[in-house]
Image (cartoon, rainbow, N blue to C red; front, top):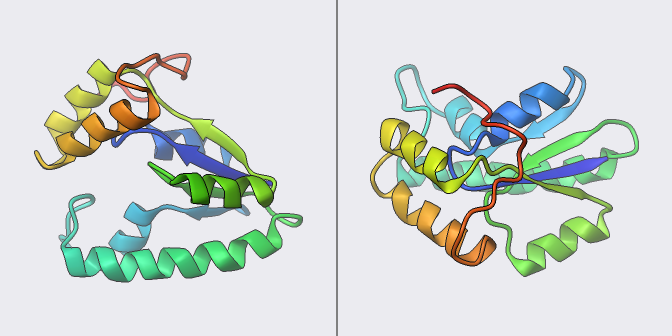
Amino acid sequence: MLYVITGPPASGKSTWIQAHATARDIVIDLDRIAAALTGPGAPQWNHDPLVQRVAQRARFAAIDEAVKHVDDVDVYLIHTMPSPKARARYRNAGAQIVTVDPGEDVVRERVAAMRSPAMDAVVTRWYRDYRKGGSRPVTAQTSRSW
């Protein structure tokens, strides 16, 4: 099965996957890919634009290959803001789309504590475009106690 995990930055998408995936499953997470491509001491988030570009290319290749194997393993793909075209592609592949959103206030607190100030604009865009201007939490509880 292909699971596409969406939600604003710092909403708990990776934590949701940790709670559901097994060691045999495939997890495609841009942050994890970028971390694998950088040296010791590199930030966990807020990567250099060149690192982001290389990681994006690796992510696209991983998606293309992983969807060929959804009958054998579960594939978990983090995609914060999939376009309508990407959503259609995922649905055509039989994906289950899961939205992780503990609420805008929680997300903004986490972003302020852990991410660059530029990420606040991504949060604003996510709530504007995906929640049509407001938050309605879709996870039963916050995913972490940060």
